[in-house]
Picture 1: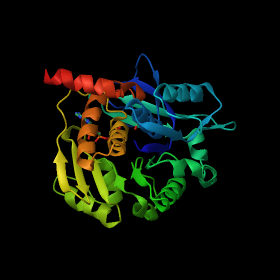
Picture 2: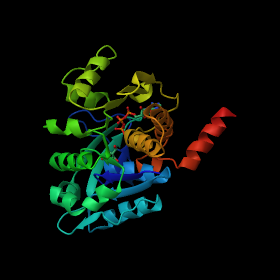
Picture 3: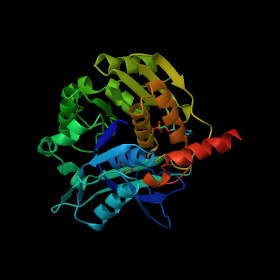
Picture 4: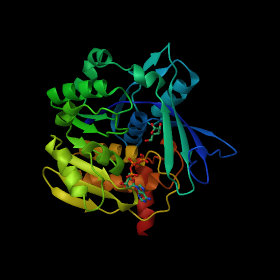
Length: 308
Ligand code: ATP
Ligand code: RIB
């Protein structure tokens, strides 16, 4: 099986459940806050490890208890955390998350150690890139570092998967050419393509990304499933499974990781996206980020039960 390397963020999520997302100037009372391991990079690594892949996490946390919690959780999912850097002069990344009664979230990330990852860190750990086959990147570490890592990975002939979230103010144009598979949601696609994305404009927005050099684009559409435009298979849609969503946090991260896990097992992108769609449909029925991600055994059992 091919080896996965996730280069990205690790955050401890501070999650509050609210009836509705607060409007500007509004104060809302709630009775508790939960601490849940998260961060787009760590969520992808956790999902990859928990779904049975050979996964390595690269990033940075502080020398604090929050960093310990995040690393222990990744280890429990069989993710190799030996190369995650511990920073003495800054704290572990934090995410402040509100989840409303429809399961939709709003997130503010305090980057902390994630913002300290540098191109030199990547260069010092070249052997990680060399030993891996599929590299997963997101945008919660500095965009210049993401671009540098993607460029090196491409040069080494690796498969580069990019979740462009959160889309930075200035997205490095150069990055597109290094990406084999990009997974935006509709909002991210709209920001990157510079146009409103509706059912009518989806094709045009994705074509715009493909023209910039991305070979395969998988757009996640929440309860409407997935849109795939791939070099080999052309355009196709995969509908979402009908489930009762309680919290969509990390659905996109688990989706991306599940695609990578299936590509690592030699499946084609259509099969990979179909499997990822199933994994993500389980994630949205559970609360939290890493707490909501199923193991491969759970996925198999879940769908066995659905069939019987
Ligand atoms: P995140 O909340 O992690 O940022 P995202 O915005 O990147 O997620 P979405 O498009 O919301 O990504 O969801 C990713 C995938 O999760 C979807 O393509 C689908 O497979 C699944 N999914 C999300 N919402 C639902 C839902 N309500 N019902 C069934 N599946 C869902
Ligand atoms: O994609 C979900 C993640 O976004 C959360 O776990 C949070 O940490 C933010 O990074």
